[in-house]
Length: 330
Ligand SMILES: NC(=O)c1ccc[n+]([C@@H]2O[C@H](COP(=O)([O-])OP(=O)(O)OC[C@H]3O[C@@H](n4cnc5c(N)ncnc54)[C@H](OP(=O)(O)O)[C@@H]3O)[C@@H](O)[C@H]2O)c1
Image (cartoon, rainbow, N blue to C red; front, side, top):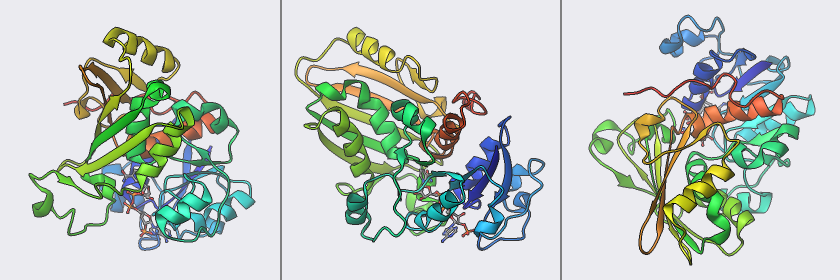
């Protein structure tokens, strides 16, 4: 497959490049940057020296026309400017932004802007939508928080009355551009709740969980911790007739039986998934609630790894091709 990346200087763009360097069926042929067009990739991403002999190119259609698939790894509101023209010339797209994850009306309400290039897309949480992804020309890759949250609860969502997600993300979730919020002295040794009751990813989580159970009530609190990668989610799940721990593990094992990248564990740690496409899940049963913890690498299963997993499914490959590396530990 000939692959293009729009937004190759950002964190998800460089993570796509890192992962695709190990993919046996994919060849990256075009990587864009508005600001660094003409510069060799390895001069910008020094850690990739020796893996790519390409220069960044301007993000215009003529530079991407040879591609079978393009990843749009750009901010929301920008992907919609590229997606329709790519699709019109028969290129498949995996969009990493939020532009195609919600229906048009909800998107315009939540993101406060008119959608100028709306197309129907399949929501790219591979474990839940594999069959539709296989037929899709446009896949909306999920947000990082929704990936960890939805996978934690999907197997039991039908029976859940209320779920409270407490999620902690590494700083790369905020993108490569430094801000006052992400500035080292401001975040070092701090864990910061932000957008506490109004994070936009709430809407994706609700949409997917309500497909299992229209009555489910959802709360979501995001926080940032001073590490680079990872999202740790604790889902506090309230339901009548709490099953035993053994029953719950049985339900999850059955639900994720054919899911290579979901691993059931006794406990989870971010440094057991770092650099990998795995989502680890552990289940704990209390008197009043179940707590399901999930751990992902936000740049891999939460973004670029899942995007490649989706590309694999779209092109009829096993979903783990090129992604079958163990996590980086310690
Ligand atoms: N970071 C994560 O953990 C994560 C996880 C899931 C999803 N996402 C989503 O994935 C997308 C990319 O995230 P990121 O963290 O990689 O962001 P980032 O580090 O800020 O990178 C954004 C990239 O987009 C390019 N870009 C910006 N505006 C553009 C435009 N108008 N036209 C063409 N290219 C443009 C930039 O390149 P130039 O300025 O060089 O052109 C840069 O390479 C976002 O929508 C984000 O919400 C991120």
